[in-house]
Image 1: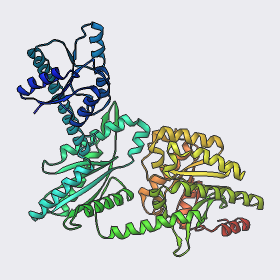
Image 2: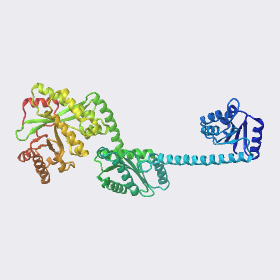
Image 3: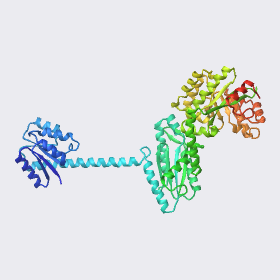
Image 4: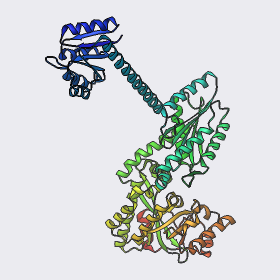
Length: 573
């Protein structure tokens, strides 16, 4: 029932209005002045208020102001009753927020007409308001369940759908596969081409996955560059592997965005219900762990979950926790593997190699802890610590009169991100230790160079302006373009050991080594062969003009004191 409040100080008129409205079927409340009227309106929240203007204690204007200031009564339709007919009075009433006014005397028909008009307008506005609230609520509900950029289901909806898919598989005695997908090196695209193209790439990836996914299955964007898929009614793991490879191929095809041809690969982790786990959380954990393994072991690949991954994950976490403490306690040791001239046989430098002197486990090799440092972000701190120690050690050797040539320090790809201030770090270390920059060489791989070509070229130029040497490590194993190579400000190429191992017995390896030597020399670069272990390898490299070598033929990596003794003894080939 519609409730109307009548605020009128003249009792006879108030009673007459209330009787008329009651007869018309309204629920009517009365108040003899504005103070009481405000109290009743606040308590009962009527659907409409009729109010006199000239009243004691609180007049109609004051009553309207009080009601409009309170959120719960601000929108109630308000009609003034007044004997004042001046336009200025009416204008004041409307400016304060009145919806209508009736001048006294008025007829019942005029009163009921004004009430009907105000209620109709109020109900129309209210319905529109509720429709907007409903629309906003529906949009909010949609956005809470879907990713705003790709329109794919978000994490919340995905978890609900995965739970339903598990229940369906359980009731029908079927298997399902859960795939977690992570885009490889997506940050490089954002850094080089901008976030707008990055967003468009996300949309394109989502559309490819949406079109690929069967109607009964699901694909969702979990977070950032991470997606998830459910494949129902799985026959066997061979079928899942086949699907995973199709997805890798699908996502690795080029994307044409704003005139750019963009390439990206992905890493996929796979787990199967009910073989690997029976509930949502367990399957998600398994898929994420398998995805992480695929990402850290080559990328652009998939990995099926196995129980062994849990053991590896526990070992990883244990190493990660210990590595934090190791850096604080300076447990990382630097070993030096001599670099030898193939023409003179003398030591011309060394490569600094990290070893972890663990208090319980003894020496831990870099292939164990460097991946941990990369994944945890500790690699920046680790490399800076090693760089300072190497430069400080060179200062000590100089004070001892030892000729060590130059020392090469390896850098991670994380150093070649715009925010990581590599140039400032190197300049600071050189200044604090006071060594000649020509004695320091920084090594980076082909993969690092190609992550962000323009930025890397500029950074390498700045490093060379400092006087530091630069070498490309493991050359031939990456994917650098020869057309780019001539633009890179580097001093040396290092031939990876995989080509040296069979250089005297495999004509393909021999051809690659000779090509690298010729290429380097044509660009006025020095060539260093890694992993030289036999006299035959040494002779082949020497005969074909390779400049320097390192490997067990001459020496394994040595602790600082042993390398210093080798220098002082003048050991040579």
